[in-house]
Length: 488
Image 1: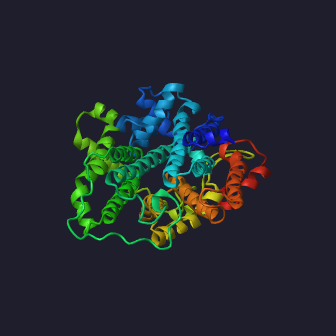
Image 2 (image 1 turned 60 degrees about the vertical axis):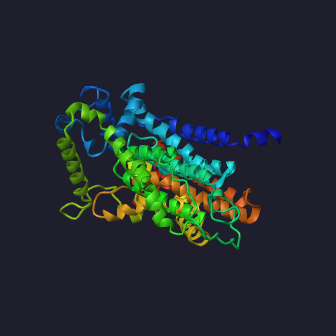
Image 3 (image 1 turned 135 degrees about the vertical axis):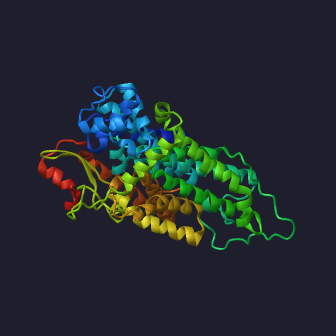
């Protein structure tokens, strides 16, 4: 028992998550050897970033050669370069083959699982629930598939998760220096963990001079968050959604910090004290990181601001005019979907198929995706009713990245755009599971029904595994795993 208690430490939970996630993601990573879906773009451009020739980078098509001449890339010039730089790291180490161009995705996908477990540790202060969060995302099917292909979305997920991790660390850092409770004035509630007391004590009123609330300009974790979100935006522009969510979250938490300190006008006080710091940390620094990611472009074109602007205008026009419907009323892409399809897994994306039943299907784990729907509603209720700051964090992180896609219903969108949202869906599920468990086993226990639900999630992943990895199946065994006609 003593040895087991020694293992009940955060470092062992995080190492276990890294071993599980990494083992799954790196196993037979080079299969299939063919390029799948947009691997025809990003790995080739990553090879160009390393100085490879057209032949070395497998650039043969006349259209690709045209874009290399015009834009310096085969076609992914419509996305910022950070993710392609990250892919190039694996190619530099292992060569321009399927393992090389997928290595970085597997590495940063594994790190995203560890970061999700680390956020859970901060939110719930429990080694057990940290491991549960890490196990669930390690075996979440969509995140697993995107960690094994040379696309950009898993890198976006890494930077977004890292950014929100730093936001939580920043909140803890400033509250410790403020001598203000991190959670609402209720015993063991809010971000600290625990169940709220039914009758909260009154908030102290200001009777004399307003209290001094520390508002340092230098907040290391805030600047670290800004750098991470800048890297997210430099991977795909949708990283800006997460940055805006973090900015909103930071503003809400600063107002709350002053309100708990007894400041009479917390909103006004927050604007006066935090505006400069927020602009520097979550606006200026991300912009600088974004510009730095274009180092190759600056080297090739010099300090050509007009050309840099024209590049972004062209990319913006490409995205906004990429209609999902062609002139005849048909879908331009067979796997296009819309945001309201994503949580219900209406239309996943098939990256690879070889008869009779070898497939790489980018589909979510139904237990997590469908379970997160109820979990998010429960989190929203707990945020409003119980004032649980953890739930506010989860809800804002999810909605900030999900709702903006509804603004573009007519452009081509894909289910795997959910990849950077998955870590926070998992945290919502863990929050709900923890509440379910504590209702019967106490705050630190875990009930049998939670064990069953976690085992079910892992079991569904194991069942799906052949169609997530291209493992050859008979037609009947493949069809058994394709639950709906829209999955084909």
